[in-house]
Image 1: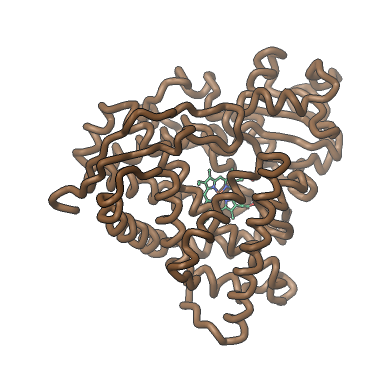
Image 2: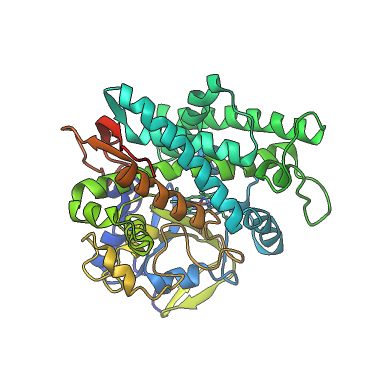
Length: 419
Ligand code: HEM
């Protein structure tokens, strides 16, 4: 059986930093294959892209998450002991805890909280000259998700907590001081949330039934035990941190409204269906998380190649969302393409693939879509602003990336009738 095509470099870590989001795609093109092997951070790694690769990557007979993600990502982005590194029955049970928070009613409540906080912020922005939308949206998301989850958040700590949630994500792909900033942010957040969980368990702090705080504080593992405090904190942060990160997609949505003014005009007419097409295309088109990692748990053959047990595997999320075999003219921003999308769980995977309950696919996907839709409504319907000269370049080598300026808006005015 032929061996998996090999990247020509003996060690590709530097090439990964140089090619960023395009690292896997470029090599797949060059080698004429959806799969190749290389060495990354001194480890043999199999890189894969495309819907067929995604389908096998999410097949739990062959891949496990334990030992998949590099330790440095666990120490910044995920936290150790969380759902991301679990497999099998234990994963399904832990995942059900997250999915129980995702009822329509609960998502609607979060969107309402975000919307109220955004409307209040418009009045403050109007008094300021310039606003960096990424920072402002992060603060709104942080206020909203803490209120939704029942986490007490004093006014004086809003800025600091928002920064820490943002840094855990922003610095996860960094090295040196950037990595350390992310790691310290995680340590502070785990301490803060850990103390809140203990206070709820000791009945010193009330948390509403069905809230994320109560659900996670009193979640029982398969053996009937409560989660260790540190792990409960990691899981609650697994809800808070990525909700703050929705601000990054909101910033990309604002960039798209600016770069494609026809769409801005179309959205003023407020058709929910069009809003959905627009938001889906923002999630497909702009880069966020580049890859996900797993490990081959059992040797298997796929597309004529042998996958040895123990190999690390990386699935290309960005490259799959830009695969020209699935997405016609993938480098063009065209929301209408979603009218004809087949809804496959493996070809549009910016938040992971497969099934939300059974696999590792992001449980926050509906929250993300609904928060983005509301943010776009607010940007288009509830405020006027100008976009001054600035550097809007989106680097493809910084991971995760964003418009260089964070998207500055100025001269913000609330619309006469705030709907
Ligand atoms: C900002 C937009 C978001 C993006 C781009 C995003 C992306 C992702 C990705 C790529 C994964 C990994 C999928 C995999 O391992 O196969 C993931 C997993 C996860 N996401 Fe999100 N996510 C976002 C928002 C959210 C929100 C709002 C929540 C919280 C409610 C959330 C909670 C989680 C959790 C808990 C996991 C781990 C699931 C598991 O391992 O089973 N995410 N997300």
